[in-house]
Length: 348
Image (cartoon, rainbow, N blue to C red; front, side, top):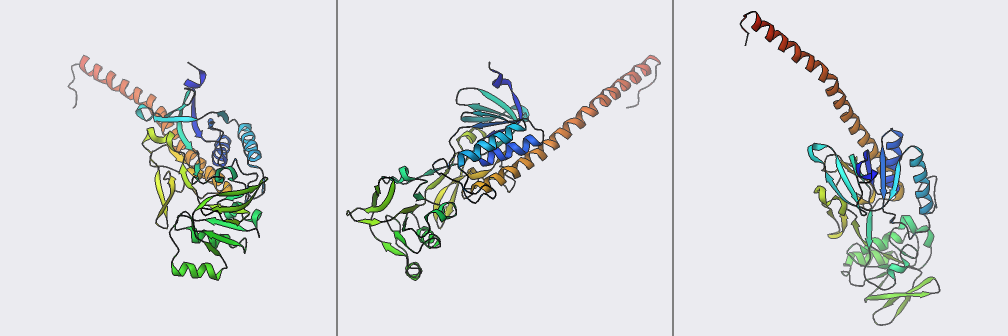
């Protein structure tokens, strides 16, 4: 049996992204024993830079995570690489057991789940290869980098018109490719026309690339529409499989009558419906950006520490009362024995 098998922590953080490391940092500074289990597959790995992170604008994601690891470790947090594949409750409310893919396991009084999500792209050739470069989804993350460029919006849901109008803020050359999505209504067509957004019928079958640059969108009939960036709305699927054993299923999120993904439901502090389990970041908020995920990790850490303080206090009170209870019981026994020796009648 390895040392990891018997190690118990105040908190095990499952996921080592911005939310997880932020939570680990705060909990370690609160003098909690913390273990971070990181699968090493951050959602923003394809992106060259992270944006809208005050004080770290434009930082490469790998650099941000390396710095976060160093900071959390500096206060005592332990960080191990590997995938957490299962979590289960321990008998008697004694906490949780977390098992990694290599079979090692640890126990924890509380869990913070920050496993993020997976962007599921439609099976159109070229999209996955260009994802995070010039195939994009978030204007606040990438809009500035493609400002004034010819942008294509690939319609996949009724939200496509909203996307086109939103991206119009960054470029006056926006084209909506209807692909297989429902056709816009009359009012939506009027909005698109008023904003100068072109609409192209027909199924999109692929992308045109020259060298290492996107140059166009290819339609089923062979026509290529020049574009330098393509916006696509992926399906956001929470990485929540590790929670199956806790009876914590993912919830579907709908927008505009269309399911856009799944998430783990949690309250504003990150507490889930399973006592002792918190969630933060994209696993519970599909639209959260990096700085928001870090903030959510901090908020959850504060709630977890407060919960542990309450538990520590309860245990301390029980321990303090225990000697007095034993002494009281001893005195009652001595009184009863003395009464019997002297032939006195016990009072019920």
